[in-house]
Length: 97
Image 1: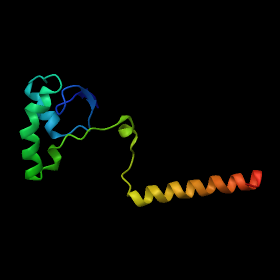
Image 2: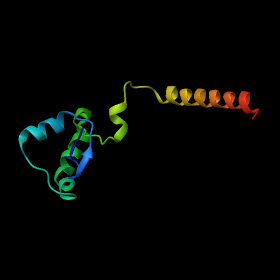
Image 3: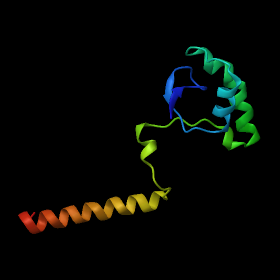
Image 4: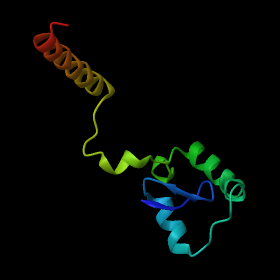
């Protein structure tokens, strides 16, 4: 997942997609930052206007590879609240807090 960035011109983590595959197969090298961004600015503008989201190259953090399922924000928040409640109940039963 970590490779030289088509969008910014330095090593970065991306979610691999069709545009990255096309660029890598072309053999065209990347320019150093910030020149790579200047080079692809019009390309990204065109992609945004066309609505071809499969060509967007989203940056991803270290945890992106750990995602095992796609969940709604409400599910995630509900799980966090339930987990916090369990912790508070445990603290209350053990320490009377």
